[in-house]
Length: 122
Ligand code: HEM
Image 1: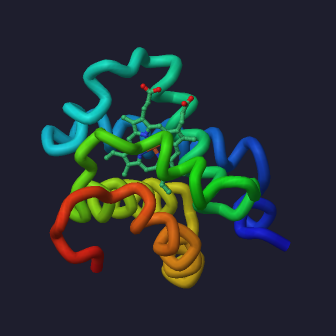
Image 2: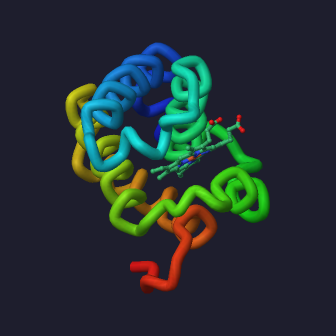
Image 3: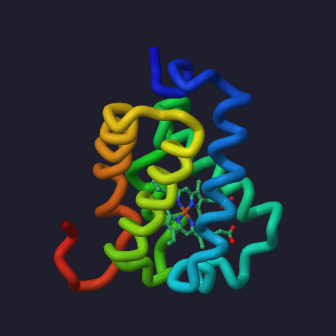
């Protein structure tokens, strides 16, 4: 059973996506990354992110993630901030700290593919 099922499947995920989306757009350090992204694509992005985070999808990771994010200059701090907003959205939707910890573990392996630059990836 994935976290996706534990949290309640599609309805719960839609709720998490809505809150996460609001959190990211309200963050002045993050909104700039999405300047060239229209709202439909942004929403699709948040859904992809949440689905990956909840283990609902396989097939993310590796070259796909690297290519999708190449040249965007995403920093380790930005990555961590996005994960933080997701954690907050999950808590707001009733997830436990244990579940949030599992999400962080699922996302961590994607970080080296998404973050660019010479700063150490932590
Ligand atoms: C686990 C983490 C992430 C996942 C699973 C993920 C997923 C994706 C996917 C699937 C795409 C391709 C969308 C498409 O081409 O239609 C994409 C593009 C993109 N991602 Fe991510 N992403 C993650 C983290 C991040 C972070 C941390 C940022 C910025 C702070 C970011 C910013 C972007 C931007 C700006 C695009 C291009 C969107 C567009 O204009 O279409 N992503 N991401």
